[in-house]
Length: 251
Image (cartoon, rainbow, N blue to C red; front, side):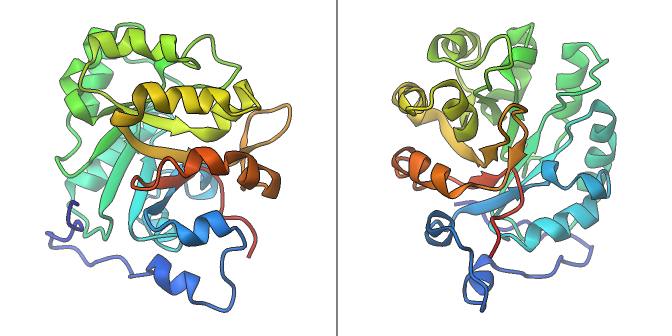
């Protein structure tokens, strides 16, 4: 297990441990969340603080200090994130991933990957959308830090085992991020989610956890019905961080 990111001259972010949140008078209402320790937040849902990386980290700490996904979803957000991490902030997280840009992409793939390769070594994973990978070999410099996420039904590819197998053939070191809401939107029975874990469970690095707003595929806090629907799949993912892609459910 990697140690927390503490080697720096900067002040540490406040220690808001998930254990403290669970022990509060307003615990998480979802049993799945309260019993899973490797939990974290994606900053992608914190749109009001976009590009305020220190503020985003502080907000993520209020969910968990174990794991975080720093999301540079628009390409113009990536330079600021690189600069923030280059300043060696004293981060408390044991697991740190970065979501690669998916919006307003202008750079050629090779140049984008070169920028992502500048992320410091303590970044454990770089999450990428397979439907945006036109030149798989261009992503090879990221090695095992590259992690492919399964897609929702709106995307032209990246939902099914065979879609991802074609990329892993070129990128054999890459890992896997199971977006359980995406899989559930493609196959409500959750059979696809199980198929993805059967095929890529050994590559699993993290889970994206949320519900999806009906008709829009935007991430929203976990519905009770989805906690039940997702439970069997999530029980197969006990040792990896579950990254919330929406605010925690109401307490």
